[in-house]
Amino acid sequence: MMKTLRFIFSARGIAALLFFTGISAASWSQAQLRVEISGVGATQIPVAIATFANESVAPEQITAIIKADLTRAGIFKIIETSDVLSDASVINYADWKSRGADALVVGSAQKLANGNIDVRYRLFDTVKSVQLSGLALSQPAQKTRLTAHRIADDIYQKLTGIPGIFATRIAYVTKNGKEYRLEVADSDGAAPVFALRSSEPIISPAWSPDGTKVAYVSFENKKPVVYVQNLVTTQRVAVANFKGSNSAPSWSPDGNTLAIALARDGLTQVYTVNAAGGNLRRLTNTGGIDTEPQFSADGQSIYFTSDRSGGPQIYKMSADGGNAQRVTFNGDYNISPRISPDGRTLAYISRRGGRFQLYSLDLTNNQEQRLSDSAKSEAPSFAPNGKYIMYATDSGGRRSLAVVSTDGRVKQTLTTQAGDIREPTWGPFMN
Image (tube, rainbow, N blue to C red; front, top):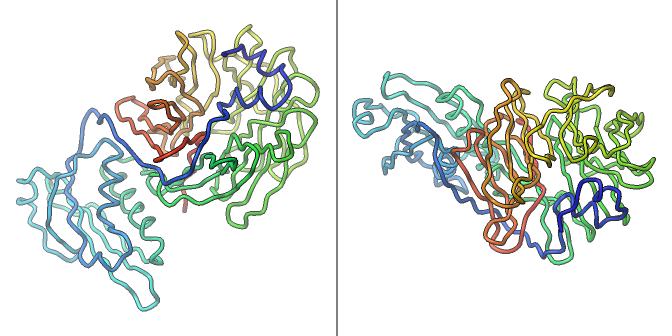
């Protein structure tokens, strides 16, 4: 069934584009994602998390969420304890060190008169016998999960020096019966909400840099059209509805521009358009297929997929267009470029030995690494701290999402109890 990139894009109609992006006629259904973890980091930091005092006033157990977050990271060893300690408790550093904990988390919760849950936490270094951090967060009860994620983010950053990503969100596509759904959820797949429902396919969601909007391609008008939707107001605008295929939106770092792929003049080429629509500009003009544009981290360049060398490979050009340089040389089929937030690593899908797998390329030394094991991986998306990549995959005959650390050691699978999920995109850091 696999075709060359040229065949896929020269064939007109919905079926060709659906094939390229991994959508099929399989029946999908929506449910909260379940996370399965395999693998750990090269080193693990032992952390004890005491039960927060009075946390039963919150609708969800704060310490359980924090533990789950740190466990998913793969770089922490949770030291089990039944102790209940508040943020005002006196800490016996030697005792916790003897239990094998290099760090200790304590805290408390209180329900305020306005209904908010006030959560206070402290993080201690038991080796140096000092407090490393502390937060006081007051949020409505329904935001308890967010509060816990933010505490986990603080712990992650204080113990690793790298920003945590637990309070970020992800977006993905599901299908329930004949209804397609664009869903937004916490980074662990919890608390999903619908951004869009349609009887026609939805593909290629992409977060705006400020996390308030999502660009995507919808087939609701019986053809692929690029929309930008405000997740707060739910209002949306069609930014690319030209003749032929309108696809593959990607945001510039400043959020003002989208790079897109259009077939309005024949073969698919790379264009840019204002995020509100308008000011369309063509960037490539070749006799091949140029598609899947992605802005570099600094906004100065665009990576894209092209078959100009005879097979699909990844190229880089100025954000203003012009001459392009080939980036990938290993393998004869490399697609779906994604650039890390620091601009040092390129993630992409490569077909080798008949298997479509996730690879990364260190752009500073051209060292390549395979990150996925399944026969069909698609749609990679970097976490905003650059340490993890989410992608779509087939797992046990089911379509699911997977997360892998950029060193390949930590792997997670996010599945639903029934049906499949696709087209993941990891949202930015939120204020």
